[in-house]
Image 1 (cartoon, helix red, strand yellow):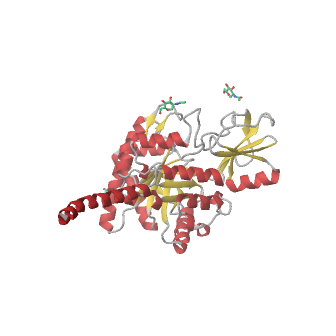
Image 2 (image 1 turned 60 degrees about the vertical axis):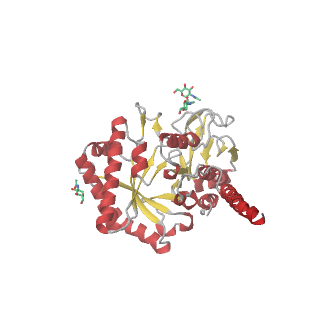
Image 3 (image 1 turned 90 degrees about the vertical axis):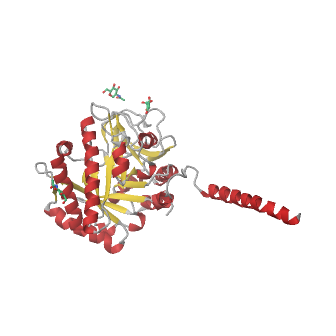
Length: 390
Ligand SMILES: *[C@@H]1O[C@H](CO)[C@@H](O)[C@H](O)[C@H]1NC(C)=O
Ligand SMILES: *[C@@H]1O[C@H](CO)[C@@H](O)[C@H](O)[C@H]1NC(C)=O
Ligand SMILES: *[C@@H]1O[C@H](CO)[C@@H](O)[C@H](O)[C@H]1NC(C)=O
């Protein structure tokens, strides 16, 4: 009787133990973490990246690499006639300084170079991507440059594919590029070069150009390590009213990071392939009337700074020097400041923390900054890194 009871108890005990185990492992996973993602994609080990504009006077060796996992050399360009990557004399000395400056201090930081950028000529990319031969020439030259200088990866920042045809060609480019990188790794018995791409803040381009068009989500999912939506430049002095550079939320429109990131996931790009953009700069206006200074106030042109932009460190200095009024906007999760007829939209420690927490809560791969030189004493970079969990 007693033995019987014990025998009957064993499966029950196993059940109880199993239940307790399942319960407790459930309770340790983060709220929004989908249990179907493989463990190695836990965002905790993710990407904390920044672009390094090569034209600036800011040695890569002075980057505080505690706060970054990946630094992008920005930018290289394809030659408009041959589509081979152009490495100018300036780059030939600058790239080794960049790579050695980082590698010496912090060998685990990965280096990539980015091709294109805001000032690029989009038609060069469009023509190159149109046929297989020129795509091949371009791809091979990028691999050659990456291996010659010892980069860990390659980034494409084509701003922007102009129509549906460009988007279809971009998908072919991603695929052939990835295949070439796999082949290259096999031949040289080296780790495959990373392939990433900076993209519009949303998966579908509604507000730029005439033709609505969507990024090739499936090719991105299959062939890229990640894409980096540029979640900034939502409003600027091109608008005749003040607005937020990088609103996390906007109840009145779809021009927000919340919408943009959601659109990528909805399009089929998994969260672990998304690295969310954060600005280390603000945008400025000249107010029409200094007494009307909210978000949406009439403006007549660019404010202080450099053609309507101002680096974070300069915003902080400007605010202090001019005793500007600083406002935290709860709705958009952003700051603005004003004094006289000057108006500035920007991010500071608190809003960056909220945005990084948003990226974490969506189980994204990570975040990146434009750009690494614009922080003030690493304040923002440190805050972001802490909020991410480092
Ligand atoms: C690119 O490189 C691959 C592998 O070395 C080669 O097979 C291919 O012909 C090259 N393509 C072009 C267009 O040069
Ligand atoms: C935002 O986008 C959704 C679809 O993604 C659309 O249904 C909605 O009308 C848009 N809202 C605005 C304010 O444009
Ligand atoms: C901005 O310009 C548009 C047309 O270009 C006009 O309709 C609108 O009233 C202007 N807004 C302000 C605040 O001046």
